[in-house]
Image (cartoon, rainbow, N blue to C red):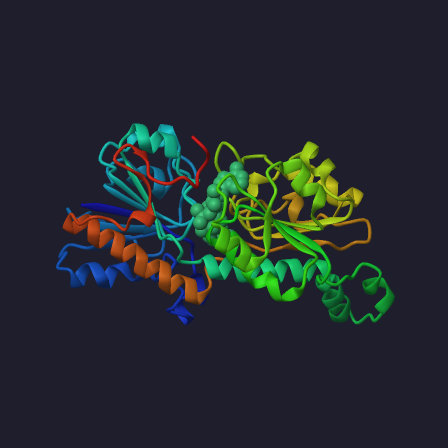
Length: 376
Ligand code: NAI
């Protein structure tokens, strides 16, 4: 049994904070857990802790994921189980999957499995599971924070203070209240719906959603949200758009130059779903021109984002409007405890031949098991 886990490097922080479970150093708590299940020959191997010979049964944990000589590509070839996280995605392309002859199970420690070619997983009968729900509250809170940070022009205000300046008018000229604004979510699933719930007390003018799946009437009424079926009409009505849908063929590049031109001039856009849902250059130029007043989120089309990625430094005409962070909204300490526990439970079911929790299954038995990754 070969289990390969691609996690992010925690370095000093992971040594100081053992609850950083999603790191190479703390290995999702799997090392101790597997040993406690009687797996005797557990070798751990990573860039920090190499071992020379491989036992028959091993857990390989590494953050090294790019290129043919990476631990990811070298050890995928005979791995049976692959564990990845969206925060430091090991991109499992069709080509790589076809070389991984023993691969049976991919587990996403978190939510969002678009870094795996899901159609290839279907064709190759590789199951794909994620820890559904594990970090949805973490992300919904982050979305609300990003919306407030942009609408209230918080980041330039804080930067001004650190610089030693004090010019209230430079900040106030682009600061607004969320009250009275129209906010809409693309995707009203677990995260999108939680965002709507959290926005309710802000007395927005209206809460809208765009999703091919209609919310049950009671759920719609509970958050006083209205569904808009046409995406152009939807964005043209929103002061704030938040993206909370998975990345798939139907959402890749969805927010492009054409759709951005239909936004209300000076709207705010928050995307914590996946970077590639928004066109990189179209967003940067919409912010530069002022068509977008602000853009915030933690997800990038390539992760880690290169040092010269335009989203790191893009600004609106007044020099603000950028609320980008590294991908961390769904990997708070609280979320890590939940997705580490969920990963173990998926592995336990797999080892013991038990049925998986249906909500966790994205691809199972050579077929889609979810309706969230596009209308088919
Ligand atoms: P979910 O499956 O509960 O909800 C997704 C919703 O999006 C569904 O209602 C689905 O019908 C809708 N949808 C799919 N395609 C659509 C389209 N073309 N247009 C409109 N709506 C569409 O998923 P959940 O838990 O809400 O997560 C959503 C996404 O958020 C994940 O797939 C992941 O990419 C991202 N995410 C990001 C995290 C972060 O740390 N930044 C952490 C967790 C999730």
